[in-house]
Image 1 (cartoon, rainbow, N blue to C red):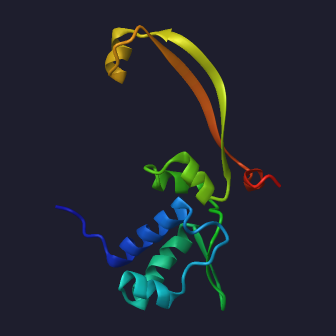
Image 2 (image 1 turned 90 degrees about the vertical axis):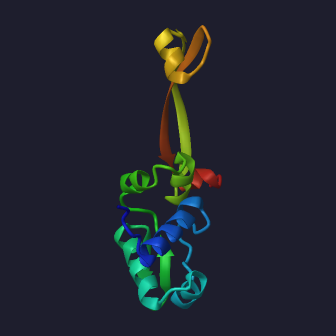
Image 3 (image 1 turned 180 degrees about the horizontal axis):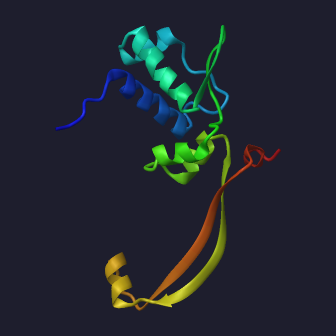
Length: 144
């Protein structure tokens, strides 16, 4: 038995993906409720429920009389967990940060039968790389 996904959840997922992909970036205003209604072909109540869900998740902030804006998530770990299929770089950029990597260690290791099987390769040696991925400041992205 498959669970039915409601229309507001579909809209919320679509908007979330637009935020994660950078189409809607931190600080940008979401389209108005009437624009979203037209875009998704759903009722105003459905749009409000979808945006409420994004507000609850910390991705969007409502400003009375101004609209809804993409905000830097308060809980980045939750955003990463919910978007595990997204690349680290996309999540970092959508969160308002510059993705950075620091290589901690690179070493050549013997490709044992178990490693060859695990990685589906037929080689005698492998490179074992340990790296640290982290969110740098947004200002580094623009050279400020």
